[in-house]
Image 1: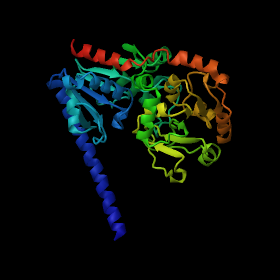
Image 2: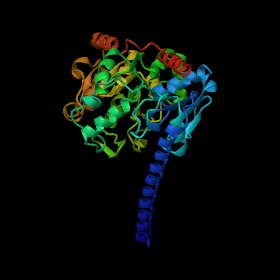
Image 3: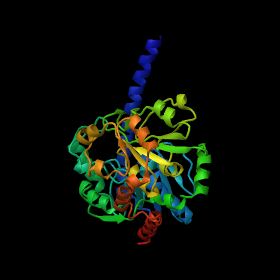
Image 4: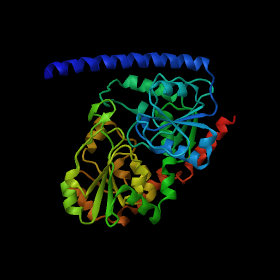
Length: 408
């Protein structure tokens, strides 16, 4: 009986999947007709963070700057989510990604603000403005600069490049955190329109809330201890370690038992997953030492509450450096990652403004014996190169641009 039910369930899932695929195809066709018949609505602004996965990053900060100025009541704002139960401030309508309303609103919107690529079926029409905020300064090679591809099962590099260019040609504005990124983005994204060299809106909070009162409030909100130092462990994802397309694994290369044994009296550890990592690991064995935050938590607040960062090749290094706090690089797979997965834009070993280690033992030792003076010069060079545009006012600058576009 159980076997029969299993087979029936399997068949039903198969046909439901086919039905959804057919429905989506019909909706996309309707969307393409709509964009030819219904005029642009000049007061509609659509926001999306990480393909609807969460409410974070540059789009969130730009939207909240609009709320701060009361512009969420002046314009019709929509935020795209996979889960519309997400709570947001201000006057905004949440729309579920890839559903009928999503296509209808996107088809008549005046402005789209997104930090990732859009699907290839999204049309660029006259009067529609696409502000691409992107999501980080690059260490690892991007888009047209990539020489090989093994990303979530995708191996067709030419198609990947073609899809990327299809999207980037629709961008009217692209935000850059620094002049280093600008040079790379122009080439890697084949982008020849307006570059906004203004720093990242998501980093404004690191200027406005980097004070004891705000930090204490955040720690209490997150349920973090206030009598211990906090390590933030925020690694990137590995292109070739995945469950499915867009669902990557969290690799437990770090020995958390050793970390707790050596540092647990003085520290606790926040583990922050990348938004593409889909894991439900059991951390109960480390209760009181490890605090896990998933892809839905905005990492900027975690930067503020932490005393030091442990990362690998993630772009978090370029944001965290604004705080001038210690950074440690747990690069257990450095050669594999650099030589076989992505490739780097600069000499990571030379520029990293903190200790680079490959084992938990060496990491612990570097934390215990860390001396600020050992990395003072490197840190200042790193900051000058990558944070020279961040000033706490990037969100304001984008909102001013939005008003200018709408009032044209």
